[in-house]
Length: 264
Image 1 (cartoon, helix red, strand yellow):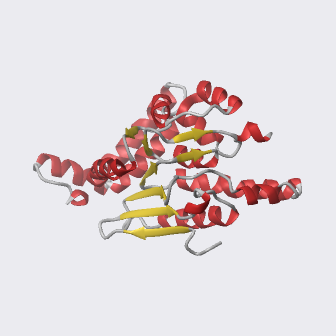
Image 2 (tube, rainbow, N blue to C red; image 1 turned 135 degrees about the vertical axis):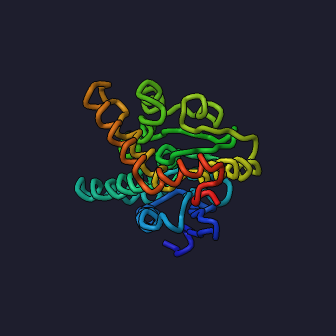
Image 3 (cartoon, rainbow, N blue to C red; image 1 turned 60 degrees about the vertical axis):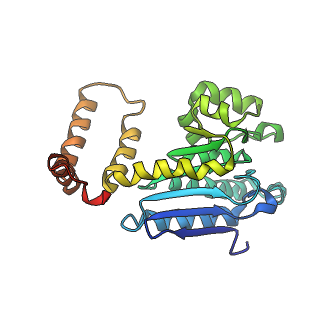
């Protein structure tokens, strides 16, 4: 892999920008790109003091066309064990992206196919150009979108996941918004950064520790039975935040009608 296939930059304000940089391949990824992304996510996970928001985008005409054809061709000759280990690398990378404590944002244009759409689903926020082409194309190749499925199903629900996984029907950014794969739709790629700026204002007004806890909260309560156990668990979570340094600072700032320290 070229050392420039995946780029990482961090702004002085605390935004990390990861750029898939294989424009001639429409940012299709292979094992090396997956490993580079995984390492970057792990590095960023440990740098919450310097990094408050993580942005994922693609250089050139597309966000990501999914799996690289040469990589897929090589996999056809691997053993079952080799294929399983290779796929586990993608699953781990997506999990690391999903589990980042910072707010994660995907800026999507051109195409987001297969695993590229999986990257979108693993982010907290996705902003897409309305004519972006999406497709879970695996069944056309006799495969299934197995490794990306946990993130996609959580994003769009089982009903649409079954339909789109089983038919490989293509759809655009506006339909991706309708089913919940993306939260914001813009007219052109030039508008992506304007919407990102709006999201960044929200991200940097929030306490970093609270953002991490809020993301974990969704995983805690999603699908759980609403009973006394869950009530006690959520009561403990809010009590933990109220007595935390961030909780005390946030309340003090509100009462004193000033900005909290993390928003200054």
